[in-house]
Image 1: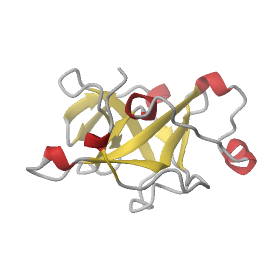
Image 2 (image 1 turned 135 degrees about the vertical axis):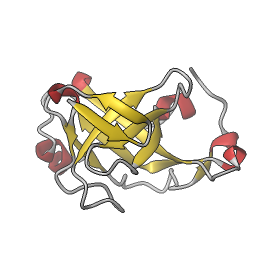
Image 3 (image 1 turned 180 degrees about the horizontal axis):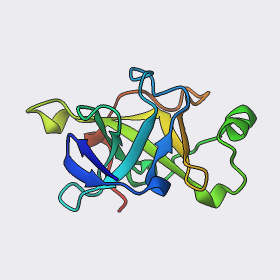
Image 4 (image 1 turned 180 degrees about the vertical axis):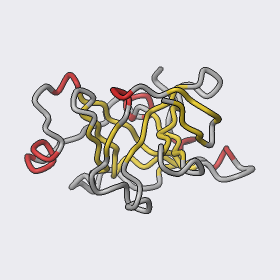
Length: 145
């Protein structure tokens, strides 16, 4: 099916739709998203809303940012996301890219997006640790592509 997004019109297959049952903080009213890869923005991908064409969130693999990144998913979140196989789970960190000032980009390592790719279920979880912040300056890290 074709969807209009901030990134243009994109063909999305049913198995590429990720449902966030409670939405994403700040976008609680939106439930259907998809992860889009554009070669011009790699390693940044895009979590695009399929319900509001104006919503697309830049995301990045947190292990590219911090090779020692650690995440512990609670039993409650494992159950909610119906995770049976950890190999089929994707974890993304949301970026904030200030308009006109990409050098001030921050990455949220404290509240990653966790997606059960097998079931098409996603959730933004808040890690129970002080190790990570909601706004780490991306410039503080050396990329580990």
